[in-house]
Length: 209
Length: 209
Image (tube, rainbow over the protein chains, first blue to last red):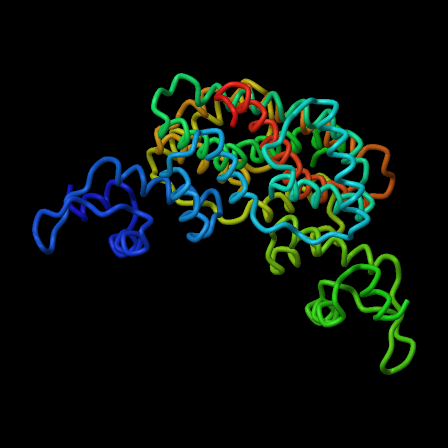
């Protein structure tokens, strides 16, 4: 297909498509003349993915670039997803050394009890979790952390459901893309469902109106 | 306490504290002389809350202002939390009308089966959920949405745990603040646990290394 059709199919404006081509986020089309190129269904899918990552996932274009380079690489799905999750984790908020040490101890204890293994205990996903727990503690809402093991148990059940989404896919590329979509959209979808459920619980218990 | 102590206690630089005072995010201290004011533990807590909302929650200062105005108001906790969640939901991503209609039908069906009631079906939390589901569909990852009822069931169990965090609190202010913290930090904490769990599941099933 031509550029105009690519834009219409993906819902991404022509100027933006050209920008992504220049930035290397979208691979070039097959050149058919000095001024024209032909694009494929893979280009449409790539544009939809970029749109999902930026608009729904809230990623910056710089992060999208890092993530796309990782999924285009030839690492194993497991390693690629580890890398992608590190990038998605974003910058780690600053907390006091005391609160961070407390939260790290809490998480190490959780990992011991659950038997979960981390590819790298210094990974941003872990550091972000430490920062969020430390912040809850500093704010005097330590109760949130007292139920950590129960939250972790439910998180494992969600992760098992997530896995069901990628099972049955045969190509490694598709598995990695599905993993990425499950992580980025899945977090948004679950947070949305949790908010609706919180409203339902709040209506019943705190009294609606 | 004086400004210097307020800054040290909260971990927020003096210049930033002054900016928050000017912007009305922090209520003024009790004036003790034309150039000095005294601040209380409530000021420290408010600064920690602003820090948590911006650094961990990723909220803009404009959103923080809207949220703080809501929690300082005199609406019921249930209504205040509804309002706060709408603000937290952020801008709704654009999706095609066709995909949006499909996702809306899916969610309406879910609400019928679960019996959950919404304070406003046009609320941003609902619209965001529609957009995320529609995006998954457009990307060809509809499997994520096939398990929606199971995700919703787990989300309800998480929301019930969240409620346990606010139960036992007696002041309305504390309930609202805990609700806010549970929502903002709770989403980050649960997403973090889910990512660790995904890594564990991926290591076991897809093969680690």
